[in-house]
Structures are given as structure tokens and as C-alpha cells.
Length: 371
Ligand code: FNR
Image (cartoon, rainbow, N blue to C red; front, side, top):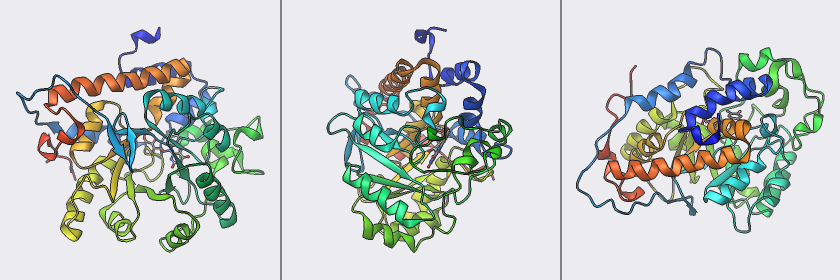
């Protein structure tokens, strides 16, 4: 169907499933084991309801915000998703350009199909980009990567902590990924790897399962970039990150692609906010220690729920891959435009003229825990 018949982010997924190469669809859409967490990432949002306010002047509404000190036109960022060229020959560059056009921040993945420098060079002057880091067993490789990223102007380093080993994405494994072109992944030098396990496993054998809390001191010694942990899944680890003076955490289960039956990020957000207040007296949103959520976000209403509960912003992954895989750069452009439109309308209906006005009393999350 023509792009103007696309009404929401779900539509892109339905089209992508039909038009994408099977291998690419399998890699992008797959999740771990029985995909229960992936399903729960969506379901959890369905258990949160709004308590809108009325009779507030919502003639003008503004959904822009600040993420780790950087302006963003919406409380969302484009999260890191590997192998962007499986869906379109331009790969992650499409995301870089759309991010510039719409004033949002892109998180560049370690395992991008485009090289890191290509994605920096594709950015507009002054465009803010974050970097997602998979930590290599060879710390010299990681050190070089991190220091190069910093030199090239990256401000936020998101260290992925939920993937000491890649999860079993069986849909992807069944495709028995064969990289025709070993340069598909430029940065990691993933040579001589076992490609019989699907795309994900094939490219990830360099990741260090020995990564632990003591390594964070080392990261602080090699870079001045803002450090955020991506993939925190309970309040105890969020508290640990807080006590280490990190800049924040992403409450994420990697889009359901790692441990199946991990809880949704939005559910974890509720307990993190509660416990950090109880244990350290912190309230959210908070400039010094910011909470992010990702997984299953498909509507501005999902994002507004997370914001109301204390998140600074949320990450969106698959919808953008589906948008550009189906329609190229115009699809990605449309996806962001849809979200802008949804924010405008939903802020009005919520009675919140700005993001600051989206407060905890505007949601009822009392049924978020079902277990
Ligand atoms: C991911 N994700 C991910 N995360 C990460 O830290 N490094 C990576 O290389 C990747 N790669 C990746 C590939 C694909 C195809 C997907 C779908 C996801 C996880 C990603 O950053 C994020 O946590 C989820 O995608 C969020 O869920 P949604 O928005 O896709 O539902």
C-alpha cells in the first residue's frame, strides 16, 4: 500500500513481514525462546491507564524535552539495532538522516552495518549521537573503539549489560544465516565465526561474558563520555548504577531477545522509581541520574506512560527498521512524523501542555504487576 495509507507504527510491521527478505525479517522480528517477554513488552503497556486532566489550556502543546542534557524534539531516541543493511542497502544512515531532520537522537550500534565513521560523517554539524557498546574480550579493542567514539563527538556511551551471551532467537537460527559479504559487519572483525546459529550468534562471539561491575571504574578511566547501562532489569542493579554515579540506566530486556520471561522495562521502571526513592531519596525525572525504558513502544501513549512514571525518554527499535525496510528513507520519515502527530493530539487529550506536565497522577499503573 502507498505510504499515505500507513496510519501507525504497527502498520509498518505488517507490511514489513510481507515485503522484507525472509532472512532480514527473521533477524529483526525474532526474540528469545518462546518470545513471551517480547509479547509482554507490549502487554505491560496495556495494563496502564490514563487519568487525563480537563479544562487546561492546550491550545499550544510542546513535546520537546532534554535527554542527558541534549535537546530532543520528542521524549524518544532511536535505539541501537544491529545489521541495519539487512533491511535496506543504506542501512543505519537512513536513521542518522531522519534523526537530523526530526531533531531526535540516534544511538549508533557497535554492530552497525555501516561503519561507525560513516554514521558520524552522515550527521549534520552539531547533531547529537549516542553510541551503544558491546564490550570485547580484548579490552584494547574496546578502548580504541570508545576513545575513537569520544574523539568523533559521541557524548553518551550506552554499555549493553544484558547480553553476556546472545539469546536463542530460534526464528533467526532457522534461517542459518550465511553472510555472503563478510564486510557486512565492519567494526568487529568477526572472522571465522560459526554462521550456523543465525545472524545474531554469528556476529557476537567477541562479546565478553566476564564484564562486571569492577570494569566500570576502568571505563571511567578511559573516557569522559556520559556512561549509561543498557539492559538493567531490577531495582538492585539500578541502585548499584546510581551509587557508582553513572548518568543513568536503560530498563530494557533487549526487545525480548535475551532472557525469556524477563519482565518488561515499563514494569521494572515502577519498582526502580519506588525503591530509589525509598533507599536514596531520589525522585524522577532527575537530571543527574536518568531512567530510560525500551521494548514494545509503538505509540506516543506508550511513551507518555513511561514519562509519567519517571522516565526521561524511551528507546524505539523495530518500528524504525520495519519502516525503512518497507519504504526506504520516506518510511522512516513517516514513522517519526506519525509519532509527532500522536504526541500533539495525546498531550492535548491528556491535559498536559508540555512534557513537564506529564506527572505520575496522570496514570494508573496499579495493575502493572500481574504476578
Ligand atoms: C536490537 N537490540 C540491540 N541492543 C543492543 O544493545 N545492541 C544491539 O546490537 C542490538 N541489536 C538489535 C537488533 C535488532 C534487530 C533488534 C530488534 C534489537 C535491542 C534494542 O536496542 C532495544 O532494546 C529493543 O529493540 C527495543 O525493543 P523494540 O522497540 O524493538 O520493541
